[in-house]
Length: 240
Image (cartoon, rainbow, N blue to C red; front, side):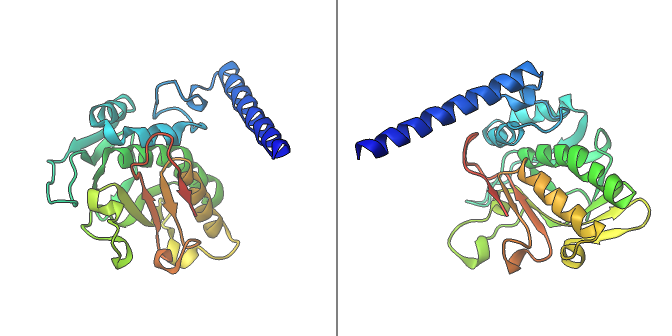
């Protein structure tokens, strides 16, 4: 027992020292997005703490809006919806122009501000670079299956994040050269289309509290589920 305690204590100390070393490394190389105590800036590249900071916006609608404004994202604030569990008071809808250039199809849906912030960073740092690199053309529209939906998860007892507009289901992407890449048709295989979809899924895992793909279960065979479930700034994250 004494030996076990000694091992656990040593592992804990090693983990703390490693964390401190990583933070010091991040500070020295000038990457504030890797540090937990620096302000979130949506225009910065994705860092080790970006996703955690985005999750922390769930309880601070004014701060979230200020970050969208700072990053040049145009949007409109939606009126609060009050219907029991299926309610929201922090929803926005993207507006044309500004720093966002990609449309959504169907037309821009209403979503919680933290989801909008995550989608903006995802578009700039993950989706567009991957599309140009792997497919040779930028994305002009992101297809989705919706955001707000007053329903439970799989007919069970737990409410979906869609019930508070805190989730979006991404179905596919339209490119400027006419290509159309969908999760349903292009997820499997080793071609550039499948590689693109897997890379945008992996990138979403760094920005959203939950990212679910066809690798999770059959219910997600045709879309990527992205949400900012309120688990706190340092809560656990789901990526599959």
